Image 1 (cartoon, rainbow, N blue to C red):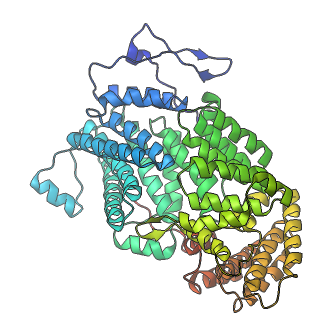
Image 2 (image 1 turned 135 degrees about the horizontal axis):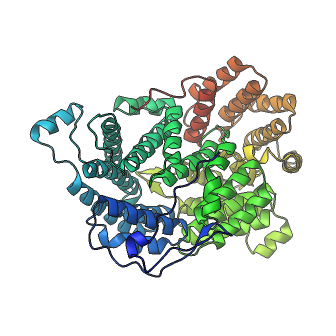
Image 3 (image 1 turned 120 degrees about the horizontal axis):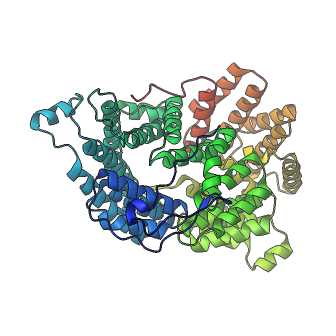
Length: 595
């Protein structure tokens, strides 16, 4: 049975007996019971935890501004108020990418770090030297333990903001140092748990939950990195074990701590997003449904849980149901409009899965106007969908694909002097329209679908796979009209063979799929620009061999794709996919546990 979420604390603890929390038992959800909370007269650790539980309940009821207002007055004098405020502002900054929001969140993160530092254990010179050489410290009070934990969380948030604030190499170095410090402090907190003298009061479970969140998230994140990256990180003290990370996160999610819901969010994000976008598409849907079920009951209108509920349906292949749920998520609140952008993005892809190009184009247009995340990607997606619409639909839209593709190179942004891989890919493909002899792209929308690993979703719908096969075969006919001297013809032919092979694999036509992937590999010498197609074809051949039970043959193709090719488009993303599949075959996917 799924573990129930912790009971929301009664607001009487904060506001006294006059104002009471009401609950509609028929709907089993929480209703508004107050307009404003009077400030507390003192703020010790127990009071701070209870207030932050109430703020968390406000947050889960889509009252984001009320939660922020409740946390702000004590943010300079309470570690949990400081952490809560920084978390909400940081989340908003990550979603908006607005410089003003980033600056506000950065200031809050700095202040939260200062607040936590005032409550951390003061070390003597001897203790400081001992900590440098890794000797375990003891004698922590309960408040000092929690200050250490909150400090690690605040450092991690500050690091994330550093990455996007200044967009230069120095910022990345500073951010990396903060992440390493946070990682080391989490390990120290884990050591504190193992001490026999540690104070285990009624709030000890909140400390345990925080350790599970940090250690679990770090292990999970590090275990997913390609081996060549992980080897470098291990040199400076990082290591990751996927199973251990999941175990810690599940332990934290099942405990009745203030961070239980955060552990749940991390697990849901891993199962429904990361496992697909950066993995091999094999996600634990049944576990996702188990985790989210009690929260769906207690917070039926929570925008974040509605988003994950919709994503679960999407990953299951229930595209139409997912569209309804994403719309419901969007309509559930208007305070955090950035969540609307996430819904638009997912609805855009759901519409593309259904081959509803006009709706997908319209949603990409909304994102290009409203969201600052990646204008180049949004405009490219918009042009890609427009290129698959009929001439009549294009006239109604009032735009032409070529015009939009020409805009993409001018929208390229750089972080730490480097382009975002997806933007770089979009720019490189769009430059075909800037040459003296512009050439149309072949099925750019389906190509992007492949790069986002969305065929593992579409593949659960035979009807949609059949429709995509028809679109691909029509494109093959159009290629026959192109001159054999066209230098881009081998690239476009290989792309169609890759897409066709993926569809055939999901349709169960494995022999035909294998012929398509071999055709891509055999055209390697003729491919002029899209060199990523060959390692992708090798990955798909490995997937076929795995289906057929030829594990060694699958591993051979994966290693060839990983070690035999470099400096091609989307290389990092493809290496994530190769690493995840090699790990599933039992070849070096994880390392020693962080303990």
